[in-house]
Length: 605
Image (cartoon, rainbow, N blue to C red; front, side, top):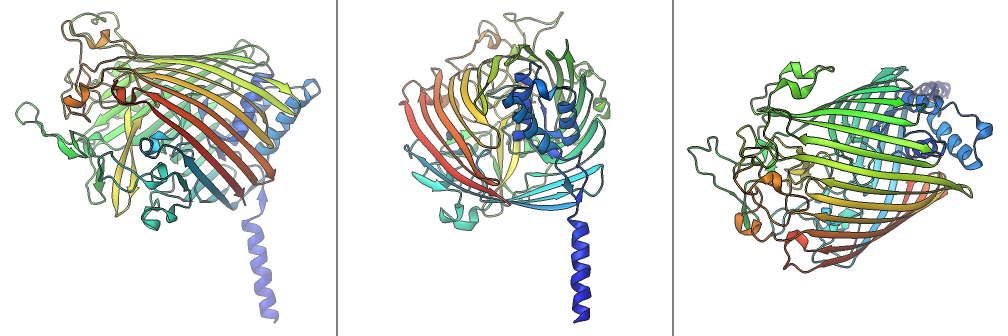
């Protein structure tokens, strides 16, 4: 009996050490969709300050600095702003634990009306990236003041399970049936559709006062956009990322790398275009040069790396933010990496390594002229003629590739929360994110050095699927987007938001072949949105491309809300009406309509 007593006592003592509370973990990393950062943003706008840093994710130490350098007098705050301040403070200054387990339990149901035309993950407004896993097992470690680790093991379905059909990769989870849920094992193939590719958030972080380093898998977002951002969007499932950031009250610097599969892994082409005929691979019912499905035995080769540095200044008594970003996509089939490009102070464009890299420059400005109102803009330059180069309309000129965004957002305290809203306009040139691979004229079957990347995902039967997306703005080039929303939120209590989205998208997509301007038919003379497709396409044969004769128009009207029943227990719902005119840019295609409803309940232990 005494022996048993000592065992119990020692076990309890050791457990108390492992799970004991420690000082605030200042190196904890908050994800890009964290409610605490959303609350921080609303607090800044409410009090008349320009936006907090839009370079996510964020360490606790950085959030503390954001909160402290506002230097707010709590006595002067409105009742609503004070509640918001306390919500942020209580979250950020929560005591950490040396070792902590968390468990999220989510039940979601999905209902929609068109089970013929809306059957792919991309057809849903409440998308694959947003859907919550049935279970999310979270492990956090805080071994010392300067270190933090996280792994999130999700029990959920893979994005796809079947790619051998006429419409492309498909899963019963996304519209094949009128009703589905995240209880994926009740649908086709049962547990075979389990996603063995997780974890998608798993990293280690270390740092000190006003600096942080993070390495691992993480989601990223750079910019203030509501419909997306031009350099880094939030729609990728994960990045294999290395990130260094340092910050002060008025300046922040970030150096980031993110690695992706080399396009040669999923583009099939002969080695010598001059002597070898290009033969499309067999894919679905048509010819194409992209084959996203492979197996685990494939030997991987090549480097495809996103590299960027980002500088942020807070100016004019916290009223203005100025953000400058320079980035390149660096590519090498031979696995060579020029270490000179890793210099944090270099101008990447001025290395003049066009055969290996595609550079981009972006400028962001946001201004809060008065309390409750913020105005922002983004401009991204992927291709633009500098002095000495051929300009638009001239033989052999490179097509311009620029993106523009202007938006405004505001809030106002009402009752116990804030009424908020935003309106945003964006335009992207047809050849944004696209470029050749060094020969100034891309041919069928040849991949380019594009800001189009792939993420490897699991398919049932031990297979691998490459999910290809734009790295920046998720709608890519050749688009005009209008997005507006209005909502009300009591942080930690409930919210309701209505959203209106309208997009006109031209014929150019992520597989469009890039070409310099040729004669009277110049690529750079094409204006957004295009109603024809002059160059070839790596996914579709010429017969399919020639059918593209119109602008696709998408209208989405949505309503979304949530309520916290008690601490850790939340319910939510979302309904969207989707209308697509000229789907796939073909005027003879019938208009598509769908009503999509999502309801769910979540519990956090």
